Amino acid sequence: MEEFCQSCGMLLEASVCDHNEDGSLNRKYYKYYFKDGKFTGDMTMIQMIDFCVAIMVKERLGLTLEAARK
Image (cartoon, rainbow, N blue to C red):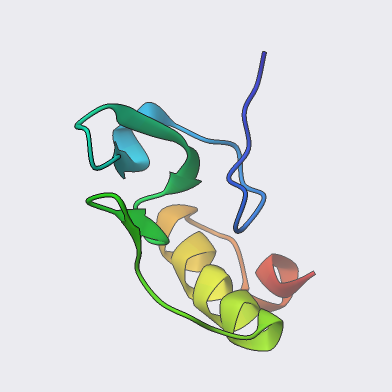
């Protein structure tokens, strides 16, 4: 069963996840949003979209800003 990040909705990959406070692998959020058992920031939906778009463009060669924003 596929799992998706509960912050950005992208398909989760264990290599991009971090850990909970007890050391177990967190399978709900990417490390960009949840690291060392804590959320990394507090932002509005628009700020989250801007944050995610930058990551998506960086991680996926050929993806444009416009396509990522959609």
